[in-house]
Image (cartoon, rainbow, N blue to C red):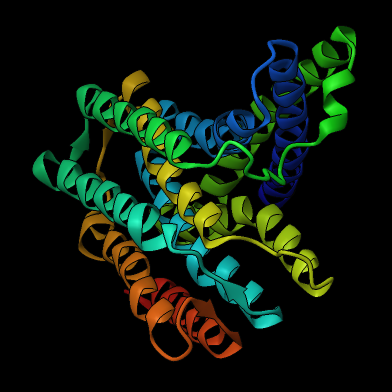
Amino acid sequence: MSVVLVVLGFALLVVGGEFLVRSSVALSFKFKISKMVIGMTVVSFATSVPELLVSLQAALSGSPAIAINNVVGSNIANIGLVLGITAMVGSISVDKSFYKLNWPVMMVFSIVLYYFLRNDNMLSAFEGIILFAGIILFLVVLIKSTKKDAIIEEVDDTLSIVSNFKIFIWLAIGAAALYFGSDWLVKGAKEIALSIGVSEAVIGVSLIAVGTSVPELAASVIAAAKQEKAISLGNLIGSNIFNIATVLGLTAIIKPIHVTEPLILSRDIFWMLGFAFILIPIVFLGKKFEINRFKGFCLVFAYGIFMMLLFTHK
C-alpha cells in the first residue's frame, strides 16, 4: 500500500504542478505582467510548489528529516542526475551569467543554509524570513540584469487568452492534486522507510528527491534528444536557489524545522555543497563553457556513488 501511495503522490504532484503553472501564467497575463517577469518569477515559484508542499507536509506531520532532505536531495539530483543525463544526451552550452551571478548566489544560499542548520540544529522562522528575503533580492537583480527582449521559453503565449472560468478550474484541480499528492507521498515514504529499515532522511534525499526531479529530467532529455535547447544551467541553478529559499524558507516561517538526523549535517549537506562547487571546474576544464557527454557521465557516476553510500551506510 505504501508503494501505491508514493506512486499516486508523485503522479498527483506532476498533474497539480502542471495545472498550477498554467493557471498562474494565465492569471499573470490577466494582470498584464510582462512575459519576462512571468517566466522568471511566476513560473519559478509555481514549479517549486510541489516541493514546498512535500516539505511543509513532512514538517507538520513530525518528519523534519524528510522536509530538509527533500531539498538537499533535490539539489543534488538536479546537478548529478538531471544535468548529467541531459549532457550525456547532448552537450549543454553555458553562458557567462553562470559565474557572474547564478553560481555565486547558489553557493551563498547553500553555505548560509548549512550555517543556519549547523548553528543550532534547526531552521527557525527568522532564518526562514532571511532566506525568503534573499530570493526576492535575487529576483530583483536577475530581472534588472536580463535584457527586455530576452526570450523566455517557459511561457506559453496561448495562455494569455484563457477564460477566467478555465483559470479557476485549473487552480482548483492544481490545488487539490498538490494537497493530496504531497500528503500521500509523505505518508507512503514514511511507511517505506519503516518497512525497509532505513531512516526518513535517506528516503527524503533519495526516493522523494529523485521523484520530484523526474518531470524536469524527462522534459530535459526529450528536448535534448530532439536537439532543441535542452536546458540551461542557469535554470537548474535557479531551481536549486528556489528550493533553499522558497521551499525551506517558507516552510521554516510556517513551522520551524529541527535537525533530527545527524547525517544530514555530517554527510548529506556536504554532498549538496560538493555538487554545487564542482560545477566550476566542470565548466572551465576541457572545452570551456560547455558540459559535454563525458562531463555529464562524470556527474551521473558521482551521483551513483552518492546513492550507493546512502543505502550501504550502517
